[in-house]
Length: 537
Image 1 (tube, rainbow, N blue to C red):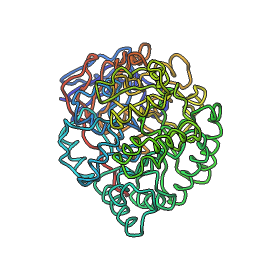
Image 2: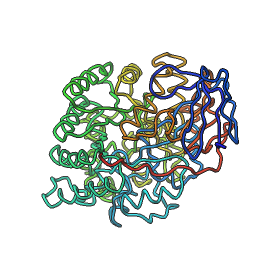
Image 3: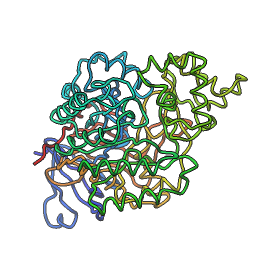
Image 4: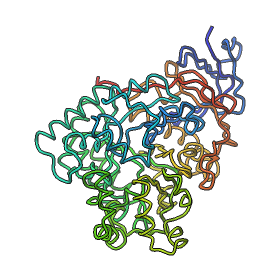
């Protein structure tokens, strides 16, 4: 007898087509039968060892988070309710060009320091891997949800070139190509870059194109955090399109927003660019989160020259009075490349987390607010935080526009990604609320998308980008990564005031046919594994 039948579910199957009522049978981690209501008349309904009454619930494929920062959280926190409770059954990690494989001992330490604000330093993690394959093997020991991995171009550059702002030599470029090929052969699904983060930002277009040619040969995709989301946003998007076109590589634009005052109302300009490129044959998709503020590290705002050489060099420059004054001038007057070419407005920069508990009083306040409380200039406050917390503070950056969010969300190339940073005392609520917010706020309350269309953007379309033939749809033979939610009540619980609150209206989530959320509570099941790239052909 089969393991489970989900009875009388309203199936929204991920295709974008109309829903239907059916019994769905699961066995051996896969969907083995779908019996629609119309076919049940006069015949025996399917039975199984367990029957789940889904009356009033929507059954859909599990959600795919196309932009996640759970690289260490998956290992550190077996519960991982931040994502499991949202109905996420697969995360794509290795984002923004910085992660923990491939590395050697030197670059591992440098990367850990650089992205402490994203993932913590990892004192509680046994870093017993160096290659991409070894990291994926580590995930295979058992995690809460599945994970796919992008090779981080900045980490690759740190390994082959270092942290210097210079072109790669031919020998270094050859090594980077080999590292990318090896990571893809070991199961990575593509290449990410963070072109406002060091050292990835030091790569020119010719270097990026060469790496993307390797990605294209293996059937992967390129996922850039491009060079500007502010003053140079349109040009930065166009640059990535041309890199993908020259390399013949699929392109997926990470957290594709149009932020800062210079871009208010300019989302249609971006979408027109993408439509022209798609008409020319460029394979393009994108992801967004359904919120206006962004989230990154405070150190990421610094001009690139201040971060050259790695985290210790950045701290040395911040400690030097004359150099710190140059940094301030770039930030506040010129508009640093780390701040997307826009002079920083300290009243939009909210501290969301610190690693040193002695600095916790700053969390939840803007830099300007903290500075006024201390009777000093905002830069003095920001500099002290960077030095005392050793580049550890994370921030919310309140620079987005709701009309841009909705316009991009409606585009046919759109998928969902949380960009969720799980560290810090007051993280961005997108880490806990992205997917139920799509379903509750933007579908039920605002009608920006239909339920069927929204589910397709969170399931089958990401699966197609990842080239996963047996995920992303409710189909016989597909993996039983499934979510059951109440369309009348599903909503994000997380807010900017209470960002770690779990959602409501998602009582059941299955990964590989096993309940990770049951009756609204996290079970102890660790059914997730690394999802490796499907070989070309």
